[in-house]
Length: 272
Image: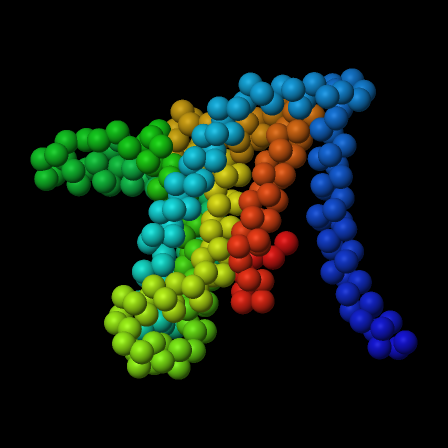
């Protein structure tokens, strides 16, 4: 009985924190979703979301593209990182984590200096005779910002999963006649799938809900769901902003549930 009471006391701070900062805000969002501007119950906020269908689709496409690029870049990097010496791995992991210690606003704003019409990249292009290129306010700039900001969240879980693969399995595959490509296809890829799914979730979720990246690198010409939500709360139009947040939240939960279904939570997959 004492042990049970002790565990409850140890878990109490976590439970209180979750209630205050997770559960209560969710109920507040749900509450405002079904309010009109006069405080009465209404479903008009849900119906009004239809006019933002294009914004939702754009946000999903951008998030999917950014996630796919992160995966294509992160998996080879994480795989070859596990083949280096221990000291090299420590250094490279530190370099991957270093940008995560910086504020996202600072990292995003630094790209405006590089991509601006008079930025570093266009000056370099002018020097070599290619002329200036419009980079700011383009989909490529927004996706570049997403990839740069979120790729560490793809690299780290994949690297962790691959590094935990038992070398005896790879040696057994070699004994059975597998070459390097066959080992990658039949052993490494299946065993690293939980890390891949975790990385996809950790990149896709912030990408679909981002707003500062699209504001700065999109030059105000590209609107994503996060931008609309921020605008609604600034007006303020809390009911519409809350309804959009609720829809986005449901979509994210469905995405994570799908990742859970195809991943193995015991092997480091995504859990909800």
